[in-house]
Length: 101
Image (cartoon, rainbow, N blue to C red; front, side):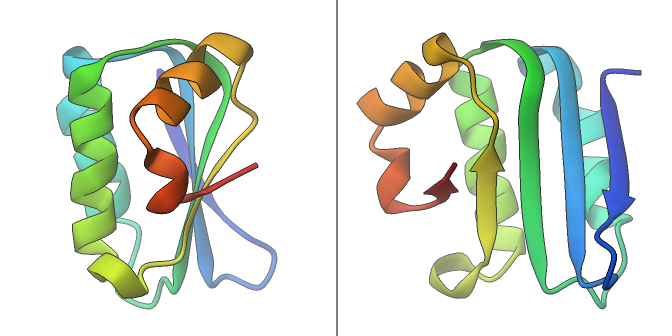
């Protein structure tokens, strides 16, 4: 399965792990992951340690997650990016919208 979710130890953060290509083909699964993660979620971590590719539709999906999570007040971290994915996020100025680790 290309998208897996789990809760942090304290249960307040939803961790969404992407495997393989993060593109339009994962749109519905990504949306389902955060929409069905529970109403009591206070923050999100998108784990890209196993992501091999990211395109413009994935950037749009991350923005949708940001809106869903509260816009400017959203607590969202993008973690474990490979160099190619980090370059795309940097060129897109996503470090101004998300915490990238």
